[in-house]
Image 1 (cartoon, rainbow, N blue to C red):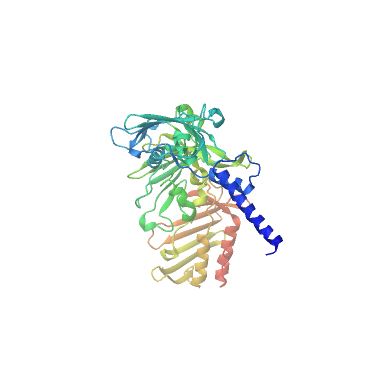
Image 2: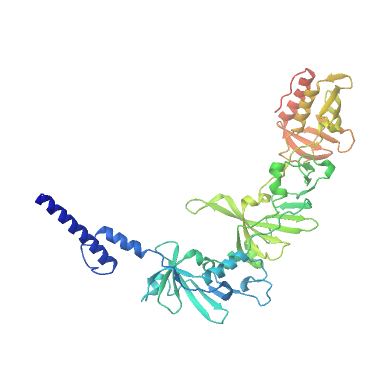
Length: 491
């Protein structure tokens, strides 16, 4: 073999062997001061040091944890196992409230199997640098044999998911997963169950009434009589009698069922606190009552949403609320605005049809204007989905499909703006819809209110205001069907 090549091979072997020796020395703790340690060896050491040590700090069965006394930045609490046995756990400071039993069980389970991720220092001479000298959170555990152990929770560690942690009286510092300590760090209010009202369990619907400071009238809903159901099984009975649009009304009529809060703001509020949160004189009140429920939700001050800099913006993110008529909920709740449509909806937002009579149920539509009366009579059958004939003033035949279009346009009369002012003068247009069974006839009288607005009196009561172009188009459509032309579907 060429001597030069042989020398290269021998040198490479020696270097490789030397590198391996250095790595072994470093891993066994020897020759730590050597300046020849390679970067790759340092990375190996760091990796080993970061491995989860899974140190058992507390290792008992959950049933052996008898009590926990927590002292934290928000005051803390005392968990106990009541001797009555009616509940597995109780929080003394929250007695009488409905507690989240899942969270309480998790709390006890976390303590019973408390594990350290790693040991930071075996004998720390300065606990203050870990936030453990005067910690914000401590908790003392009482076990079923009467023994106790007390622990300190320090600052968030350099690895953000962990907290520095030690046992009271010890200088051995651990890193413990923060999620296993969260119930000791958090407010006691986080242990209150946030479900407020029960879900609807039957088809029964009683009465829902909303009062609000910016409305001069209560808004009330109740069930429609079965034989008069059309689109929704509920109907508005105040401030006007009107049918509902199920797409927009369901959150108002049924939002109370299964309603939950986002968080518990505070427990057992005082009179002063009710005033502070706007609940002594609430902005809105929602009252629902049926044969099994009689509940009230008070809606107080709103809490503004914030921008990226934490500054308030105009929109309301949530409201502070108080619930009555349920057990274990004597709290001020923060509820997302998205769950509280009662705070912002307008009555016109949830309405559907000004008249609910189907074409198959009517026998006459009489239209009166300043120029005279147009009387449409018809014969129809719902089972066959057929309009057999339509006559104008008893003699002139009208195409049934064209009349269907006119009646469809009549049903589309806008209901967005409700109106209660008594109109002046005489109606310029009156539409009378008469059923074949003479029950539920409707009479709509239209009065000029402004140059672009028309007031509508429905069955003798001022109820709506619509744009005048709707009535203009209706009269034009009457002329169209007489000429045998299709109606214009929108104003």
